[in-house]
Length: 264
Image (cartoon, rainbow, N blue to C red; front, side, top):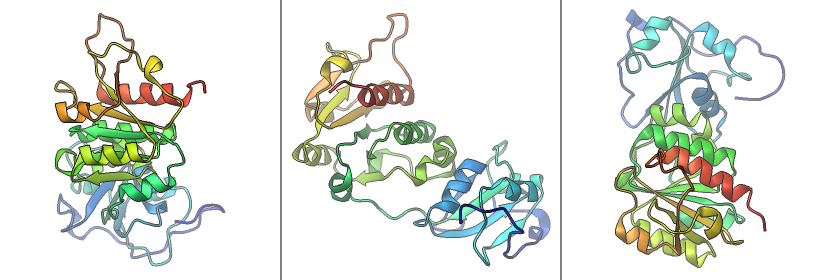
């Protein structure tokens, strides 16, 4: 979807949804996004293979820019779109079906990271949390998030909605062996800091001047023992004793801010 210029009539196959009903789930091998920010970002991503857009006319008008020629658009009513997604999902008049992004390799990220922080998520499985972490990663200039493929949510509409567009801009590296990936980070010059409430040092005290790989564990269980053992240091956020812990996405945002504002 090209930027710039005024909006003109959007082209494509336009018409009411047949029977006014959707399947309720994406076609095989596809993912389904909803909401203006998630859909607009996916449409603007040249690496995303789009399949079809269902939209109200108001939803189309809210998009920034224009759809490409012959883009498959099917106009629908709000109630019709509600049948394409989960109940009470805030689709804002836009539902996009597209292919998942191609895999990204850690070696490629490390080659181009230029010292930007990495976020390592150990068994963080809630798609809302992963999406919110992607959003914070985009806000504070992280090079990528890294997860273990078996212990992370798949790319989905919930992740995309929570990420508010960041799913399209922040590389998401999925690895088979998270410990081995952390060894690669160390070899590339990253200092690996695991966030743990029982740590003695605060994050500010543990931050080096070198690039940082921030390791976050799942809420409740925290990091696995093997992953903590692959950290160069453990650190905590100096939160009040009246609160046991922070949501992992909130903790990630605060930690990324601390890294972004550290003094050299």
